[in-house]
Amino acid sequence: MREESPTSARAFYDALAPWYHLVYEDWDASLARQGAALASLIREHWGASASRVLDAAVGIGTQALGLAAQGFRVLGSDVSPAAVHRARSEARRRGLALPCHVADFRALAVRSASVDVALVADNSLPHLQNEHDVGNALAEWHRCARPGGGCLISMRDYGAPPAAGTVEIHPYGERVWQGRRYRLRQMWTWQGQRYELALEITDADDAAEPFTVLKTSYLSITPARVAELMRAVGFANVQRVDGRFFQPVLVGTRTAENSVIT
Ligand SMILES: C[S@@+](CC[C@H](N)C(=O)[O-])C[C@H]1O[C@@H](n2cnc3c(N)ncnc32)[C@H](O)[C@@H]1O
View (spheres, rainbow, N blue to C red):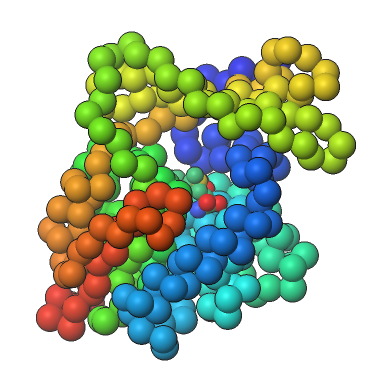
């Protein structure tokens, strides 16, 4: 068994990239479902002409590929080179255009006001260490969005953190891939507002113990606090949208008044 010491998001997602689709029972069905849900949210909030999307935590492309299949012009970036590499090859395999590069979403290699929507989906933002970093990331996404465009974030809704030392197990269940059965589960160990996450992958046809344990950490920041920070960096009409995506969604718009190019 390979056990890694607590790692950065980059190392965690580099190691997870070949396995990431197993997080979903049927990754291809999830691409289609998430793409359709996000397309309708984008059109509803920023109009039918909103078509340029920057997915700043593209990962292996769960949302970006779904949106590209819906006709959006998607640019992907992510801090994990292995995830970016896989997103590119998944796009090629499907005949979709998905230019991607490696970047931290607090410092994006994207021109100011050049995209209709900056997208950061599936709880990627809480990988940051503290609220100061979250504010810096939100300000960067505000910079990238054109006036009248905006930002769309999906994230978990954490309640109050449990007592330090509390351990929670979150199993994904069994997955079948290339004729083998795998079991995946997350183990969360709470330490105040942060928790350490260990993702265990077990080959159910081979052994009872995981063959890999990948570790990372999260900040259990709430959607309400992220919405406050979005307003603080200049987003207007900040709203939480429930029931349209598999996680709560936050949207905010860059207005003409707060569109000073920095
Ligand atoms: C849960 S995954 C979601 C990936 C993708 N949105 C999806 O659903 O397939 C979180 C992603 O956030 C990325 N990430 C975490 N911190 C980042 C940062 N500071 N800058 C850019 N990407 C980051 C990770 O590399 C990872 O790909």
